[in-house]
Image (cartoon, rainbow over all chains, first blue to last red; front, side, top):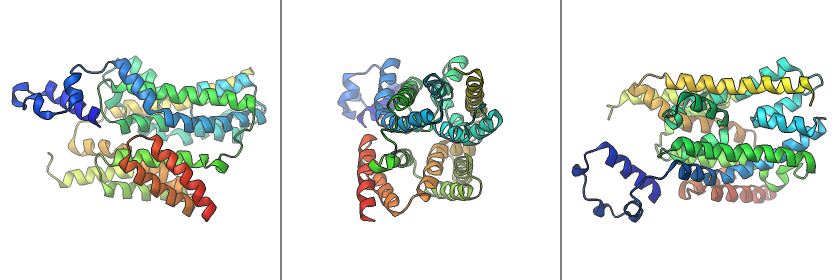
Length: 266
Length: 98
């Protein structure tokens, strides 16, 4: 909390004439006074790693289940790790295993991946704020790390100096958790065959509820939430795939746009 | 590693990555307009709600109650691991009750 308030002040100092502001002493945030220089990119990276550790744990549990499943489906260890390492999209990989045959049904796999992963389109569309100041090739490469979990952690953490490095930290945690867990799950087998027994199946919903609250409480807008929830429920009932996230996200954004028009911009 | 298997993974990877790149490029081209700015600002919250609401819809009363507990915990505690741990414990207990 203190850290974020400090960042706010740091931004003020850079964007305004310092003489307009009250003397720093009056602000009374010891941390700001003690460390006037901004955190480095590697500090931000480390912060991203630390902030996403709980999420990494959730990914680990599902990776173990996934790894055990790949072994049952007759993939070799190299193939299982290649899949997690290259595709790097949890839910699409589970769906792919459901469709799995030899030879692989490439068209069905590609179509399923597209439908399940289309939600990444919207998430990536919000990434300009995070990595927009990077050279284009680097920004485009970093997009590989956009997944539900670490994207949400990054956005929930809020704008900060070196936000892109923070995002990379979260991405590396999720990537390594997923890859390591796939390999472990393959080798060790079905240790966590039923995550439900330990309540681990609730880890993902709980995580997304917590992140939604973390993001939502910053700029609360109940009409947006209601629109998003209703559209997502309807899309889940009648379409499935990525449609709930896509249509829910767009419905919420539309309501936000409409409401913004009703107020004076300030 | 079987070539056909690797090719299938590469095709899946190209699709997942391509979606992200398209989304990003569209995101960078959104013109600066108050309405669009408001829409983009609320988009993350809307996406997360749209992710979680169907998940919960497929669950039952124990999960709904646990989700309420998680939301309350997340409101007061910023550290993600706290609401997460509370939620997992809560859901195990609640499933025992129902």
